[in-house]
Image (spheres, rainbow, N blue to C red):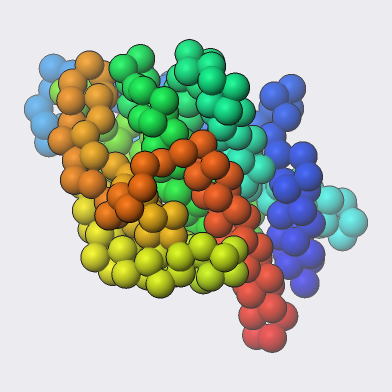
Length: 316
């Protein structure tokens, strides 16, 4: 019961306050931990097999520590008093969620585009995407922002919420550790091709179910938001595997269908063009208001999972 209350309260707190820049965040601590372990474990001159073993060791250490520490803190807090435990667990759930932050950062892009300030929009979108943004046009910037909202509907909202519903903030923090490792190490370049493989593979595994659940929730949200629910379902069925990752195109396809636009396509990473297939039919060009619509899908999807998940916890 305490965990359910904490998840609900944490969800509301995230929607209200997001992630204030002044507040220390556990993901930053995870990032520093990954950097420290990488310096100690990664040996570029070693064999591919040795690099993969070192990368797997880093993954194991991070997941273990990021699950153990919150578990011990919660045990101590609830031992002191249930109210202390409830407050700490609520704060943990709040910090695991990233729904408001995703909306806030993507809306900076939208506002800049509305003002006609492409350079400002390019700078804003560079904060939330991994691709090179210097070459992006206004349409490319808009598409990048919509894609980020769509993909992170799963990674930043649905997946952490699902893991919290299943295993409380301990499972939520373990998931965030995996997701953070993938974002820092899971690149198919010369530096991380072998060392980052364990992080990338584990991220694929832990996002297998959440990404598909997120896509289905987004399809339902399209109907509720007055968007093209039928198109969302059809494009999702057709294009959900049009990505190198088995999970990334799930929500992108649903979003593209709901909006009636084409997403993905070629992008530049670290100065190199990466060929990608398009997702969606592109009945019309993307526009800044599509960022607003994508965020609406994000919020409705997250609210539906929170309500449905808590109801199931209460029944079961």
